[in-house]
Image 1 (cartoon, one colour):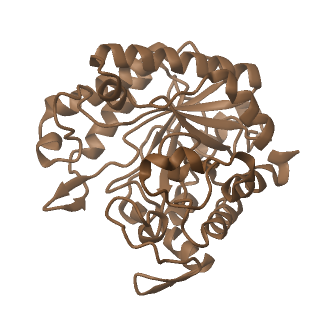
Image 2 (cartoon, one colour):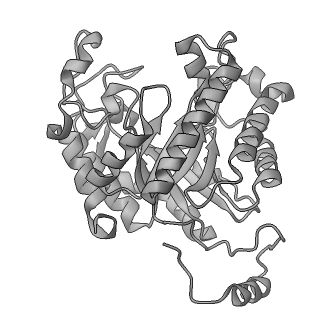
Length: 371
């Protein structure tokens, strides 16, 4: 659903000139125009786990989503299936082709994302968060080349593909502390240029460092290209959303409640996302929450998801639930138990009886999206 469609294209151009909005021959739209099918409500699906694209129809029919995020993870695919980087990339693209064919068939849109770490060759340590990586132009070139290859391959696609994304959680670790890489803005400009060389009209999703959260937008920059979507991942507070995994071993946190010496409820979540909201209002740009979730066994997770989606919808933000497949703790078809031992997790698949499944269905089928 496009917004601001009250004028003809000719009238929009006249207004844009009067308002001083930058116009180029390859990109003649107002900054306030929304991407197709906006707002997006959907789920993320990745290629490191088995997923037959024809199964997408069941998800669309069950949850009435209007979009998906297609996550290509070539480095992880190469590592897990003992493939060369070239083989992993070819298989990723082939799977992406089939996913887009199914999106076209179903009448939904897709955001094509490349994740999973750089360099793409798993024989070399992942370095995309290191000082060495960001300071070496040759290392960063692989990211630009990857985006160039992606956009060149998919430039012919129709409206089923609405956007590209890469490096959705950019950061540099300096003495174990996440910081903003000084080369990030230049890298994003190079990525935009590479895409525009192949695909003048597609949208590009960008998230600022460090980490791509909504709270880092206080110092975010706006790019001159008018087909930019400003993205973020919403996992605040991490102590709650990630409890029991990675560095967050304590599973005692409840939402709403006291977490990290602060009381977290809907109003606290709203305040945490205000930097991105202020950025949206100042520049009148589209905002997409490319990931949000809470681990399935966290107490109050369903209320947390409901509260953040209430805010997303209130502010006309698009959103994509993380994740349909991948790590079991995010999947909507599992129960609310942290499996022990971890290898027993398939026994916790309960399908549409899972609390998360029911909550996600409520969120995706309410309002216009569910009609």
